[in-house]
Amino acid sequence: MTQAQTWSQRFEKALHPAIATFNASIGFDIELIEYDLTGSVAHAKMLVKTGIISPEEGQALVNGLETIREEYRQGQFNPGVDAEDIHFAVERRLTEIAGDVGKKLHTGRSRNDQVGTDTRLYLKDQIQQIRTQILEFQGVLLDLATNHVHTLIPGYTHLQRAQPLSLAHHLLAYVEMAHRDWERLGEVYQRVNTSPLGCGALAGTTFPIDRHYSAELLGFDRVYANSLDGVSDRDWAIEFLSASSLILVHLSRLSEEIIFWASQEFGFITLTDSCSTGSSIMPQKKNPDVPELVRGKTGRVFGHLQGLLVLMKGLPLAYNKDLQEDKEALFDAVKTVKGCLEAMTILLSQGMEFRPQRLAEAVAEDFSNATDVADYLATKGVPFREAYNLVGKVVRTCLESGKLLKDLTLDEWKSLHPEFDVDIYDAIAPLQVVAARNSYGGTGFEQVKSALQNARDRWEAAQS
Ligand code: ARG
Image 1 (cartoon, rainbow, N blue to C red):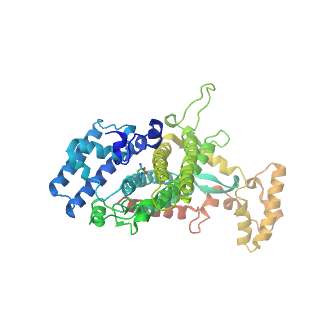
Image 2: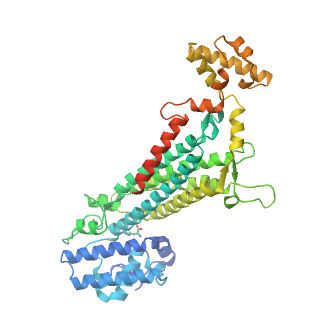
Image 3: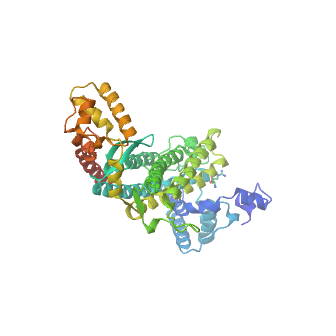
C-alpha cells in the first residue's frame, strides 16, 4: 500500500518524504501496540455483538490481531514511517494476515477515539505499576524509621539548627508524602478510567454500536457522555503529569537532604559503594549521583506538565493533530517517575547508612535545646515571652564564652533566674528534649511509635 492509498481515493500523490517523517508518530506510539491490539479486539467483539459484522468475521479479526501480538512479541513486527502511526500499522498488517475482512475493523470508530482508548489503557497499567512502586518505597522508609526511633538528628528551619528530632519522625514525614502520592494517583486513575471508544471522529457514528459493552470488555468504569469531549479531553493526562510532578517534588526534596547529609560538612550518612560513583580525577571522591540525578530529572516531568497545559490551552474542539504531541510527554514522564522511584528505593535500602555516633554528637553540640530552657521556666510560671527573652540573653553569653547550655554551672543558672534548679540538666539533654515533644504528631518517642504503627497498618491495608 502506498502512502496515497492509506487514506482515501481523494489523494492522488504520496506525501513528501520529509513531511511523512514529520507527520509520523510510529517512532514512539509503537509503545501503545499491546493496548491498540486489546482495544481493537474489544471493538471487533462489540461489532459482532451488535450484529454489525458476523461472528465469523469477528473471529477472523480477533485471530489476526492476536497473530500481530505474537509477531510483535517475537520481534517480528517492526512497522516503518510509511505506516504513519500504530493504528494504521496494525490495520495494514491485519489486512495482510486476514484478507479483506481486515478492512472491516475500522467500522464505527476513528483513530481519534482509538488513540484516546490506547493511551488511557496504557496509563491505567502504568499508574498501577507506579502505585506499587510507591508502596515499595514507603516500605523501605518504614523499615528505616523502625530502626531509628531513638536515633536523633538535628531538625532545621531556614537550614539553621532548630530542635532535635527522632530520625524516624523525619523519615515518617516522607512516608506521609508518599502516601498522598499513592492516594492521588488512585484518584487520577478514576478519571483515566473512562472510555472514549465509539466517540468516532468527533460526532459519534451512524452504526448501532454499544459503547458500554466495549468499555466493559476493556475494564473501563464508564464512558464519555459527550463525543467531542471524549476525543479531545486530555485532562486526565495533565492530572497524571501533575501527580507525577508532586512525586518528583517529594523525591527531589529527599534527594537534596541526602546530598547534604553525605557531605563532609554534615557527615550524617555514608554512601555505600553500590550507589555512589568516584571521580575521574579526584581519588578521594564518592559522589551521590543517584539523588543528584533524581533532583535533576524532576525538571523534565515539570516540563512535560507545562508542555501539555500549553498544548491544550488554545485547542478548538475537537481533535487536532497537536494532540499527537501528548504521547512522548506521557511516556517520558512514566519512564522518569518509575526510574526515580526504583533508584531511590535502592538507595535508601542499600545505598546509604546513617552514622548514629555522628548524629548524636551533632545534636549535643548546639543550642537546639534553647526552646526547652524557655519551656522549663514557663512551666514554673514565668510568662513564656519573658522566659524566651532571658534565654536569648543566656545563649548570647554562652556564645561569648564559648560554652554550650549544658556547660553552665548550677550557680550560673541560678544567677540567671531563681527558678532554675538541678533538673534543668535533664530538661536540656537531647533525648529528653525530643521525648518531651509529645503533642499529637510531634517528635516525642511515644508519638513517633504510634505514628509508625499507624503508618505501617495503613501501608499493609494498601497492599490488598
Ligand atoms: N497518531 C495520531 C495521534 O497520535 C492518531 C490520531 C490521528 N487522527 C487524525 N485525525 N489524524 O494523535
